[in-house]
Image (cartoon, rainbow, N blue to C red; front, side, top):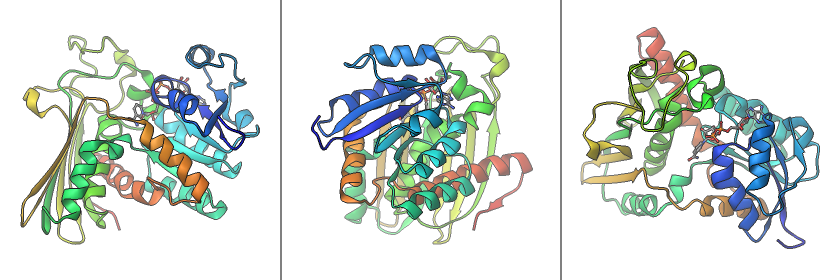
Length: 333
Ligand SMILES: NC(=O)c1ccc[n+]([C@@H]2O[C@H](COP(=O)([O-])OP(=O)(O)OC[C@H]3O[C@@H](n4cnc5c(N)ncnc54)[C@H](O)[C@@H]3O)[C@@H](O)[C@H]2O)c1
């Protein structure tokens, strides 16, 4: 840490904060972690125990943390709390690195984008897979024209028997949605990024809860509260873009798939060939995305993963849920 370090706070000190954000903000040379916030005192204690300082100022609500002196915040709460907290942080003049998904509706994305742009603040969505080696190889192949003119993209986010156990991921009031928002958004973001964000025109989708409320289904990550399981564990959809490209998406936390199909992947097929990206389930290096956020603050941008880039994936997922409810195709623009 140096005298010119950027001062950072973390809001929501659960699993992803402790696994990724706190290690980044306590090891990157130009970052200084100055405060923590969580509504759960046990999560705050656990966070204090995994940082070298061990006794940072800690708050039980975001408003109080945002009143403190700092340049930026990480937002790591469950999905449904992202929108109000990110908006409050931007209104308080802080740059924001928000966990995926940025929020759950396209209108919310636009409102956050407007709040950031009005104040010249960096708003970055955390999609760490974009910074991995396999993503770099895939985008270089796309830019070199390996696929040619893109025709169809197949997006998959599949697990065979790993249903999350955290309430924040399975309770709709906290998560906003299930596997599509949790895993699908990663692979969908990758596909859209590889295609340089063509304009989405329509989406159809289906969501199902096949395993999450089944008392006899055994997940590899242990048990969860069946009564609180109010999201989908299986989702699929079809997307059309204005350039004629189509995209299919399949997401599942559980299912009888071929083990070789497990993981996050997308396959871009064009008139010249195919570009395939797969993350599997192995952790990708995550520090580059945190360093990119700090660099964007110092240079004045652009955001390494901007709200404009997040907009089509959130619009597609919002449309997929709406289509699943209505049983009809949803026009997006
Ligand atoms: N980018 C990735 O690869 C990745 C990986 C895992 C999780 N995530 C995302 O990170 C977010 C958190 O996931 P997690 O697994 O850490 O969940 P978690 O439940 O372990 O942690 C969330 C924490 O937020 C706290 N919280 C809830 N509401 C709050 C509020 N209003 N103010 C302050 N704190 C509040 C909870 O008490 C909890 O400690 C989710 O949006 C999830 O989608 C992203």
